[in-house]
Image (cartoon, rainbow, N blue to C red; front, side, top):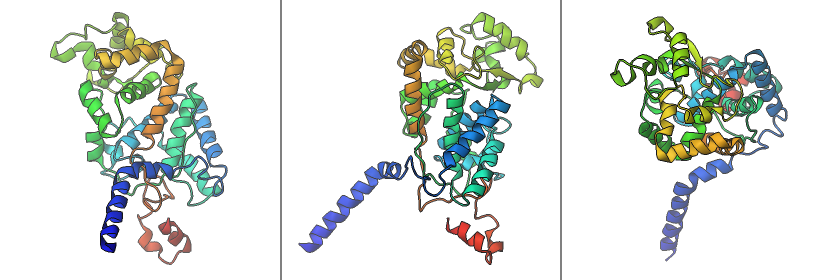
Length: 345
């Protein structure tokens, strides 16, 4: 009887750990995680983002995109920051377009001076993205902290897992679903395109050869089409030129993006596709009419995004340098006390 009771207890415990593990991980995060060990952590991160935006307002969109690209590839673990030659920086969605690395580097160096070996690069990036939205006029939301950094990055995983502006909406929805996000999250997080820019090659087919027709996308607003054809002429050397995703308020976080979609003036084909599906079109219309609704839902979806695949102690590490794992080169420092301390992290 004692053995039977022990087996029952084992299976009940195993069942709970299996199905409740995401909730257990989330419960390990805390708004006050650094309150004792690094009390100025949030202030240092927000100050770094503030100064970066004062220097270049467009960096806000880049930091937000960097966080999204990090969390979407094997979870939020700052893998997108690693300089691995076969890492995520070299993947097609990031190469020659992802930016903001220097902002994170600067913030990390300040935190290493204030509280060495304490704050993860993942928490820095997560908080920086939230601050970027806040400083751009968008919603503010508190960020739970306590994430740790991963050891490696994968170019192949980034190419496969990140949504592409060339994909049909059903494929993009499937990628969100795989991450535990739902249809509302697809629409809401697409609203991040209310700030930032896109390279011409990501939408040029709509201007000159839509679906192989040799003609522009007939649904694209005519005045927008004319302006874009001027910015992105039909020649290879225009591929890397930039156009604002929201030409009305390109550096202000608002709901104009959704208003543009309603008017068939969305820049990316994958964005405009949200108006061609009844399920998503109704949400686009709602957000175009209510900024407060969009802001509230965006904060909720960002909180969900920031919990994907999170590593917490004792998993992962606290990198000293966001561009490389602490494991790199540590064999040469076996006699160094500081190196031993970093290895234990």
